[in-house]
Image (tube, helix red, strand yellow):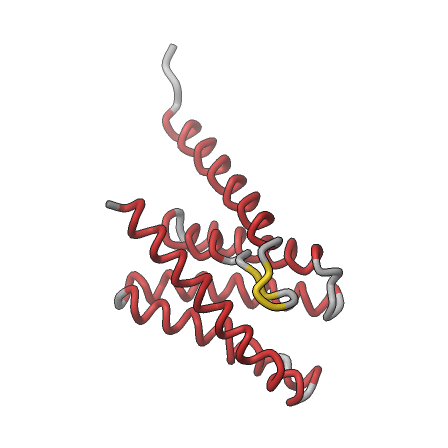
Length: 157
């Protein structure tokens, strides 16, 4: 019996994406600060290993799982907005990784998901929110992005 290789590749990709989403759920339980958790490491890893689209799916669902386990502290609509942002950040992270190098990608990913993400919520929550969340978000972002690159390079070899 001959199998269609495209179908098998599709099944493998869907299985891998599903496993990474499950790992995001586990990472969502490892909190760094409030809703800042290790949920986006699988998303950034998916962006590197499977491509931008899959990374965007994994990272956005990972954020929603983290927000869910924390009780959606910023409200469900804000967390959907953040999930969309994170999908864009994963896409850009992969772009900068391919275009430049891992150091630049880590820097860009950390800045996007850290201070820039906090700045985007200033019109809604004010500068006090930015001051309170900037450091934890930046630290959590760096940990997630760095781990994703470390794992990707470790598996790649």
